[in-house]
Image (cartoon, rainbow, N blue to C red; front, side):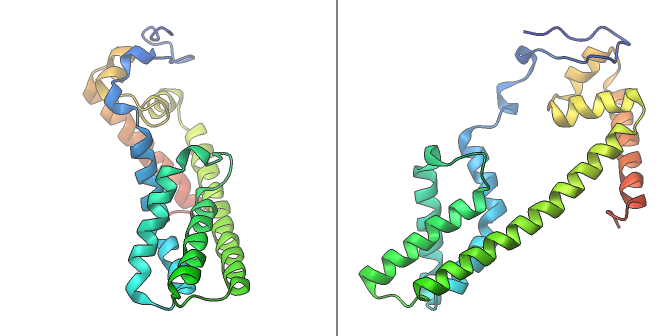
Length: 196
């Protein structure tokens, strides 16, 4: 257990785990739901490219999500979630093709579509990675008092009351620091051409 930082010491703003409410720690189900929401559009596009029968698209998508949930323990977190999920959907499609005679693309086309979808996602993830790096750089340019509240609020996920207590500030002061920090980060991102 770490100790809260003393007032006006911004060099190491540690807050103990006991100060984090359990509701702030996401469950496996909540994390899975986030991944599903993030991937649902690209998975549907993939299924539509693979499947020539619109009446079974939703069923195929649901089947892929159910299998992914059941096999979540097999997922290697060091790898992207999208390709893993599309792999499940591809196997579901091929199984339906064999067992129900559903109309799907052939296996060679399926493999090609899978590779293209993975390349597209990799490119998109690279762009997002660049944006994240730019945000981090902009946050590093902030004054120390603003960096501290940003880290506590967004990186460490602490509530305003907890941050205010640790820094011996009012909640209103913490809110104002966060507003100023967000405005400065937005301006920095605009100067980099990454925010309209």
